[in-house]
View (cartoon, helix red, strand yellow):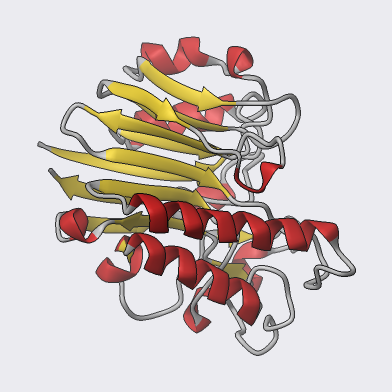
Length: 262
């Protein structure tokens, strides 16, 4: 049976509980993967989500930072989470549906402001995190798997508002793009969003610093939906919900959707 999946960096699930409920009500994806929940698992406000039919939850959390969760109408079993680069952060959780499809939900480190590991510890941590993701997927060789999340990298020239201007800006530097490409190659992942929308500028994030994000439109595509080759052909219907950035007290990210006929 087909299912629709969405990924969204919510930037505090407790602060934006109402926005999550609105998305679940208006769009009704079968599965919603959240990043940057910013709370321990026991403080995720599940009662309202469960009332909307999202009775299955797997998550990793920590107080005030990071955190990933999968809310699902479909039965899903927790199959683990990795602490890549040994950061002690809640950045990955994986679940398996009854049809055998594994969903990986990631929140890759942002990497700070300076794209130099010697000057910026956070940038080095980001590269190390991606390297360990690469090594894991090279060893495991995932099958029937979907990977989603805020990967904090806009890999293509048309994934940013100005390629040349952002070449030295964290999230679009060549070394980050190369590392992300190695993760994709190791798991043989396919970019479902770009499979469906191969041409044109696509963004899923607009900075809070922009006084008029919509008019300026200085966005980046940081949020991704990938799949392994054995099920990539079943993916379709990709869309990015740009209007969500204009909701009251929004996250700086918007949801990315895809449907899989599996």
